[in-house]
Length: 156
Image (tube, rainbow, N blue to C red; front, side, top):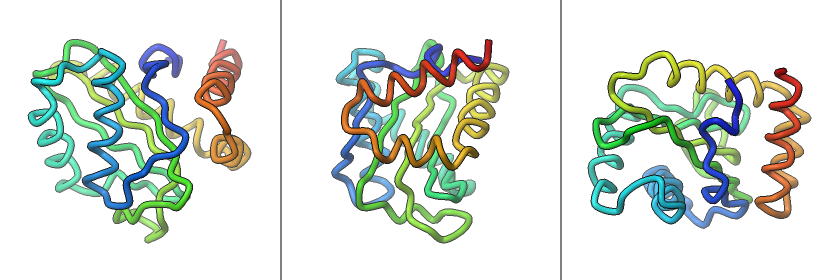
Protein backbone atom coordinates (compact mmCIF):
# COMPACT_ATOMS: atom_id res chain seq x y z
CA UNK A 1 0.00 0.00 0.00
CA UNK A 2 1.27 3.43 -0.91
CA UNK A 3 1.46 6.21 1.68
CA UNK A 4 -0.06 8.67 -0.75
CA UNK A 5 -3.13 6.44 -1.03
CA UNK A 6 -4.29 7.63 2.39
CA UNK A 7 -2.14 10.60 3.40
CA UNK A 8 -4.08 13.77 2.71
CA UNK A 9 -1.66 16.24 1.05
CA UNK A 10 -3.25 19.24 2.76
CA UNK A 11 -3.15 17.54 6.17
CA UNK A 12 0.55 17.82 6.94
CA UNK A 13 1.96 20.00 9.71
CA UNK A 14 5.68 20.28 10.32
CA UNK A 15 5.37 22.20 13.59
CA UNK A 16 2.59 20.85 15.78
CA UNK A 17 1.84 23.21 18.67
CA UNK A 18 0.18 20.76 21.08
CA UNK A 19 2.10 19.46 24.08
CA UNK A 20 -0.41 16.92 25.44
CA UNK A 21 -1.64 13.62 24.00
CA UNK A 22 -5.33 14.53 23.60
CA UNK A 23 -4.46 17.94 22.17
CA UNK A 24 -2.07 16.58 19.54
CA UNK A 25 -4.68 14.03 18.42
CA UNK A 26 -7.20 16.85 18.11
CA UNK A 27 -4.70 19.00 16.19
CA UNK A 28 -4.06 16.13 13.73
CA UNK A 29 -7.83 15.64 13.35
CA UNK A 30 -8.24 19.38 12.69
CA UNK A 31 -5.78 19.02 9.79
CA UNK A 32 -8.17 16.54 8.15
CA UNK A 33 -11.11 18.90 8.72
CA UNK A 34 -9.15 21.79 7.21
CA UNK A 35 -8.22 19.57 4.24
CA UNK A 36 -11.92 18.80 3.71
CA UNK A 37 -11.71 15.03 4.18
CA UNK A 38 -13.50 15.06 7.55
CA UNK A 39 -16.70 16.96 8.20
CA UNK A 40 -16.58 19.43 11.12
CA UNK A 41 -19.84 17.94 12.46
CA UNK A 42 -18.07 14.56 12.87
CA UNK A 43 -15.12 15.94 14.83
CA UNK A 44 -16.30 15.05 18.35
CA UNK A 45 -17.35 11.52 17.39
CA UNK A 46 -14.02 10.90 15.64
CA UNK A 47 -12.07 12.37 18.54
CA UNK A 48 -14.00 10.10 20.92
CA UNK A 49 -13.22 7.09 18.69
CA UNK A 50 -9.50 7.97 18.63
CA UNK A 51 -9.33 8.49 22.38
CA UNK A 52 -11.25 5.24 23.01
CA UNK A 53 -8.61 3.43 20.93
CA UNK A 54 -5.87 5.05 23.04
CA UNK A 55 -7.58 3.69 26.16
CA UNK A 56 -6.98 0.17 24.84
CA UNK A 57 -3.25 0.85 24.69
CA UNK A 58 -1.03 3.69 23.59
CA UNK A 59 -0.36 4.09 19.90
CA UNK A 60 3.02 5.58 20.82
CA UNK A 61 5.07 2.71 19.41
CA UNK A 62 8.50 3.92 20.50
CA UNK A 63 11.47 5.57 18.78
CA UNK A 64 9.62 8.91 18.78
CA UNK A 65 6.68 7.61 16.73
CA UNK A 66 2.94 7.85 17.38
CA UNK A 67 0.25 6.40 15.12
CA UNK A 68 -3.10 7.33 16.65
CA UNK A 69 -5.79 5.51 14.70
CA UNK A 70 -9.41 4.44 14.88
CA UNK A 71 -12.20 2.90 12.89
CA UNK A 72 -15.42 4.87 12.79
CA UNK A 73 -18.79 4.87 11.09
CA UNK A 74 -18.28 8.64 10.64
CA UNK A 75 -15.68 8.12 7.91
CA UNK A 76 -16.21 6.80 4.38
CA UNK A 77 -12.64 5.96 3.34
CA UNK A 78 -9.18 5.53 4.82
CA UNK A 79 -7.63 8.97 5.46
CA UNK A 80 -4.56 10.15 7.28
CA UNK A 81 -2.77 13.23 8.50
CA UNK A 82 0.86 13.71 9.42
CA UNK A 83 2.57 15.96 11.90
CA UNK A 84 5.93 16.68 13.46
CA UNK A 85 6.40 18.03 16.96
CA UNK A 86 9.69 19.87 17.37
CA UNK A 87 9.53 19.64 21.18
CA UNK A 88 8.10 16.14 21.50
CA UNK A 89 4.89 15.08 23.20
CA UNK A 90 4.46 12.75 26.18
CA UNK A 91 2.35 10.04 24.57
CA UNK A 92 2.58 7.08 26.98
CA UNK A 93 4.90 5.45 24.44
CA UNK A 94 6.03 1.86 24.88
CA UNK A 95 9.61 3.07 25.46
CA UNK A 96 8.58 6.01 27.66
CA UNK A 97 10.16 8.50 25.24
CA UNK A 98 8.42 11.59 23.80
CA UNK A 99 6.85 11.38 20.34
CA UNK A 100 8.01 13.65 17.52
CA UNK A 101 6.54 12.00 14.42
CA UNK A 102 2.78 11.43 14.15
CA UNK A 103 0.58 9.69 11.61
CA UNK A 104 -3.14 9.82 12.36
CA UNK A 105 -5.30 7.27 10.55
CA UNK A 106 -9.07 7.03 10.32
CA UNK A 107 -10.82 4.14 8.60
CA UNK A 108 -14.41 3.04 8.07
CA UNK A 109 -15.67 0.56 10.68
CA UNK A 110 -15.82 -2.30 8.15
CA UNK A 111 -12.37 -1.87 6.55
CA UNK A 112 -9.96 -4.12 8.41
CA UNK A 113 -7.75 -4.85 5.38
CA UNK A 114 -6.82 -1.32 4.25
CA UNK A 115 -6.55 -0.11 7.85
CA UNK A 116 -4.07 -2.85 8.79
CA UNK A 117 -2.12 -2.46 5.55
CA UNK A 118 -1.75 1.27 6.19
CA UNK A 119 -0.56 0.69 9.77
CA UNK A 120 1.95 -1.89 8.54
CA UNK A 121 3.20 0.44 5.79
CA UNK A 122 3.73 3.31 8.23
CA UNK A 123 5.49 1.04 10.71
CA UNK A 124 7.85 -0.28 8.01
CA UNK A 125 8.63 3.23 6.81
CA UNK A 126 9.37 4.60 10.26
CA UNK A 127 11.59 1.68 11.30
CA UNK A 128 14.25 3.33 9.13
CA UNK A 129 16.10 5.76 11.40
CA UNK A 130 17.29 7.77 8.37
CA UNK A 131 13.70 8.32 7.25
CA UNK A 132 12.75 9.36 10.80
CA UNK A 133 15.61 11.86 10.91
CA UNK A 134 14.79 13.20 7.46
CA UNK A 135 11.17 13.72 8.49
CA UNK A 136 12.19 15.51 11.68
CA UNK A 137 14.43 17.81 9.62
CA UNK A 138 11.66 18.68 7.11
CA UNK A 139 11.22 22.44 6.72
CA UNK A 140 7.99 22.37 4.71
CA UNK A 141 5.01 20.13 4.02
CA UNK A 142 6.41 19.77 0.49
CA UNK A 143 9.59 18.25 1.97
CA UNK A 144 7.44 15.64 3.73
CA UNK A 145 5.45 14.95 0.55
CA UNK A 146 8.63 14.50 -1.49
CA UNK A 147 9.98 12.01 1.03
CA UNK A 148 6.68 10.07 1.13
CA UNK A 149 6.52 9.94 -2.68
CA UNK A 150 10.15 8.79 -2.86
CA UNK A 151 9.43 6.01 -0.37
CA UNK A 152 6.30 5.02 -2.32
CA UNK A 153 8.40 4.66 -5.47
CA UNK A 154 10.67 2.22 -3.64
CA UNK A 155 7.59 0.01 -3.08
CA UNK A 156 6.90 -0.41 -6.80
